[in-house]
Length: 525
Image 1 (cartoon, rainbow, N blue to C red):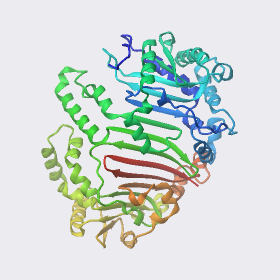
Image 2: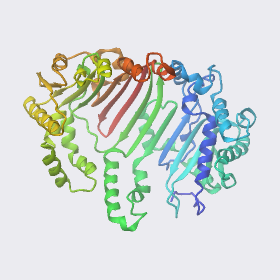
Image 3: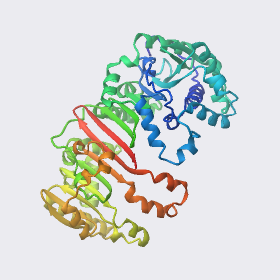
Image 4: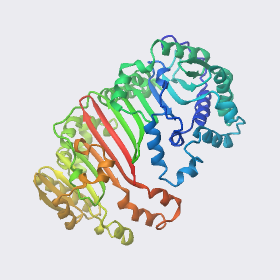
């Protein structure tokens, strides 16, 4: 039970929470629309984590008044898409996106509130949702919504009207059961008055913003952007681990549930003890950045994937560094995950008998010290027109033992032939490794190496590729002819017009001692 909180009523009112979130998010504005609001370039003031207590297990925040740079860069990014104005109704950066989104939701909900009269006088720019451990006798988590307000008294009346509006479509009225308490510029809304008072008192004593794990994760994450999420993996495990293991739901499954719980506990400690995610902008890209913490993350000697050595005509790349050592360290965990309760040794014997592979040795040979798979832009259009797979230029550069890799390729080709899909792969040796490709010409191209990692497009999309252990890259410019052909021809329809501004998509993952960082970027021209 959360200290200082009164137990909730025996029957949880989940409709209330839905009503709060639906009503307030409609008024504050969804993240997409929020990015256009920058007429007040402050970005200052308190955040929801300043008004929610530190024993939050999971926390999500939306901020339509982030830093000035975030607002300007978001607008510049989104303004490149023709469909942005159509989707949001915003044609002037001074427009209040909260009103635009509220009016859009009001049309479908039957809500008769007026934004300027009933909402704008009290509603602020930020919203946060906190998830807490269940109170005594409950299995469902507690939920509190922290809403930034400009006028406490007006907000207490306004939030009641918003909740009722949010639930009108569901035919349920839980507004009379709701509780709300004011703290630090925020109205804390919960399912009962006792819970709301408890959350506010606990936040006054120690807000989430003062929690050491939370602040460390957010500091590592950096700019929190227009939206962010944080979770306490160990706290979630402590609160819901047994339920996730099924033992609490069905006593007959207690033994299986205990095993699932044990596996979850191990996964949390190894990989998800805590974590944070931010959604943010640069003028040239939208970015999702994430950090997770656990004992299983250890810095390896080598960094930087072989993706940087692929040809600059690469349309798609997937690369992994230190794959062989990752397999060594994680093989037992891999078997547990894919075994689905089966004896790992028995499962392994079955796979090896059916495929002719030797595991994990062949997997280590495949990934090697550095593995980069590339799909070249050349030949894609011919493939679309003819359907001839020989036109496909697909291959990999691998830093590994060439003889072991050649034996693995032979095994794979034999397996494919038995399966009715004859496969002939071309191979070339390179310094410290081997190249394998769908045809001889592309194998020679890959063997010569390339300078994909030096191109502006790649470096914009893939953050710190020279330090990353994992990389994924998609060149939308290279794929544009294929997309146009598959979607109905050049210039055909609004989908194609809104795809044209896209330049590339990139993912990079970097492991540090005790944590892993991942960045996803979508760049525009």
